[in-house]
Amino acid sequence: MKSSSAGYCAGQSDRHSKGLRSLLGVSRLSLCVAILAVSAASSHAESISGALSRAYSFSPDLNQQRAATRATDEGVPQATAGWRPNVNASVQAADTYVQFERFGTTTDSRTFPRSASLTVTQTLYNGNRTANTVRRAESAVLQSREALRLSEQNILGNAASAYMNVLRDTALLKLQQNNVEVLQQQLKQTQDRFQVGEVTRTDVAQAEAALALGQANSFTSQSNLQNSLAVYRQLIGVPPRNLEPARPLEGLLPKSLQDALTFSLSEHPSIQSALHAVDVAALAVKVQEGALYPTLSVQGSVSQARDSSTTSLGLKQTSATALANLSVPLYDGGATYAGIRQAKETLSQQRLVADQQRELVRAQVVSAWGAYQNTRFVIQSFESQVRANEIALNGVREEAKVGQRTTLDVLTAQQTLLSSRVNLISAQRDRVVNSYLLLSAIGNLSATKLGLNVTAYDPTVHYDQVKDKWWGLRTPDGR
Image 1 (tube, helix red, strand yellow):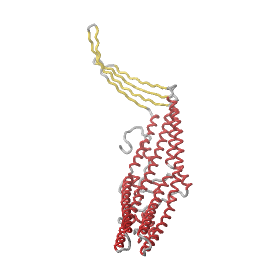
Image 2 (image 1 turned 30 degrees about the vertical axis):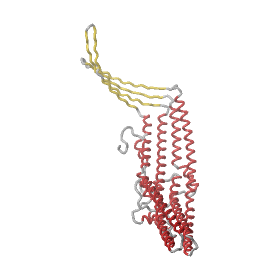
Image 3 (image 1 turned 90 degrees about the vertical axis):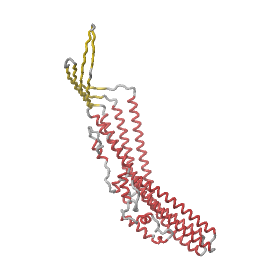
Image 4 (image 1 turned 180 degrees about the vertical axis):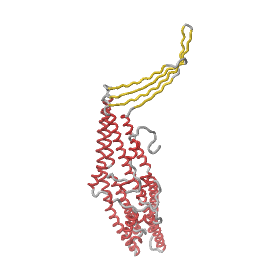
């Protein structure tokens, strides 16, 4: 990453080496060149891949979504519990005192009844509610994984934007600071010429106004950089330090808009999540309908009771029971039927949501594709504009020396060149960011796709650890 970016920036610098001696003393002040100048003091620079790796591993937003996915996994063993027996044990102990009085004679009796029982209940049939509940829980797990994948895309995309914003705002601040230095020199020269009568007080005032505006813009750029640094710290987890220039993800992007649409409509996590939500809603209907079917279960129990007193050892009784229970629902006031109708309406809603997500993703892909393709031509236009404005500024300066141009003309030409360079830096930042946004729009922005040096989080590991657990309070990580 480092060598390729340096080569890219070197190419930009060679093409515009003449600009090193121009107004602001930076070759084109393109984004990559300006940041190379800022980060040249250290050989230990941070690449965008390193920053994204940090965000992937330590982002609180992404980690909380992973925890939410693990929590959803536990819905499967909860559902499969319907296939397993319920075992209950009970123990009773009492101390009973009874006093009898008959014909003036009082008799006391004290007993100590004890009993213990064990009951096992197994459901054999419940209208397939258990099977459908398990399938619904499994669909919910798949839906949560897509939500995790979407969260990963958002985190990586935002982190890439934060990285490039720091680069852009650092370059813009350097531009504005250099501009202030040039305007200060311009003001001094104008004041010297005013002292010898070559220019008027108006020229001095114009130079002073231009310097004041340049200083205000410099303060604004410094504030924007501080904001970008704060966002970077929030998303990446550490303050930025010696950031390397970055390049667009051209090799990872689809070749055409149609390829992008085809991939996104089949793979985007928003669409996949919506389709799994449809499955969850459809299975919820079946679970509700299962309440109309009979329930068959068997139950076995064994108990032992002992009744002793102060005068005797008492009686010991052991019993065992096995029974089958068939429950047939007839009418519950219409609540079950209302629940089924409600579940069907929810299913219809989720289907519409899935259609909505398809159209939303389609629009996002078209927009992202257009924005990315547009930046190429925008950069070319701004590069041409910068070259033209450099020539214009040099010409205005020469004409001003012989009295054919005023101080205002020079200041205007300087600000026009500055504005075009600001636009060029922003456009170069936009091209890199838009490449990440396009990859996200088609649903393919991930740590694996970017080749980040991290251990990819695999949600199936936790699922396999808990899906068949019969008991246990500890989570797989020991908590």
